[in-house]
Length: 228
Image 1 (spheres, rainbow, N blue to C red):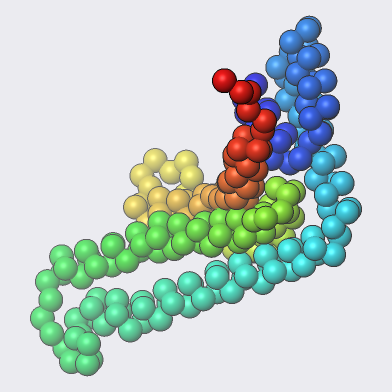
Image 2: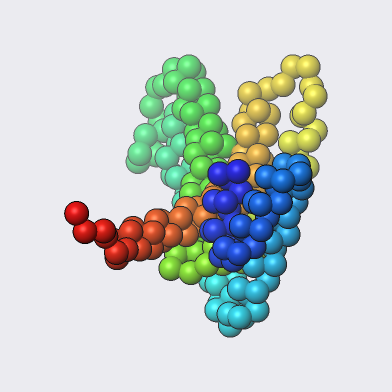
């Protein structure tokens, strides 16, 4: 019940409708019915919010797409640059100036393993962070419906990066003896396909939640107080 009320209020569902649904649920309705009605009410509220602010919604979608695209491309370019200038010379046994140096094979393998792990986990987490920041900015000082707009705008980029990763990762799922690099690829795929949308949506709801808490606090301070 708490989650249902929290979600409907985040999306500005009318209090009258919330009260009606809660009353029917306490009567003879099931929890499944309540969740179905909640999702329908949220979908209607999102449609109304976007319809009333079509221009703002279009701007949010455009900015969300461009911002996430810049974030993805820049972080990936930075990773490739660091790989070329820092990691590859170490693996090849070169110093910072390109001079050959003696390095143990164990050290080279450790550097390679750490860097590949950073690619699968670190880069994936950075992309989730970027999606969350974009989603939070989209919903900040606005209805949580704009978090949905931002999420939909980000989905093409998620699929653009995630589907090729998934095609490569699906080959290794189910192997009896999976290589550690295969596990890293699966982890990166999961972060892109599932982590990024969840981060964008959760961050958007979080931004709206802070605004509502501030509004509730303001109402509490302004309420009339009984005389002692």
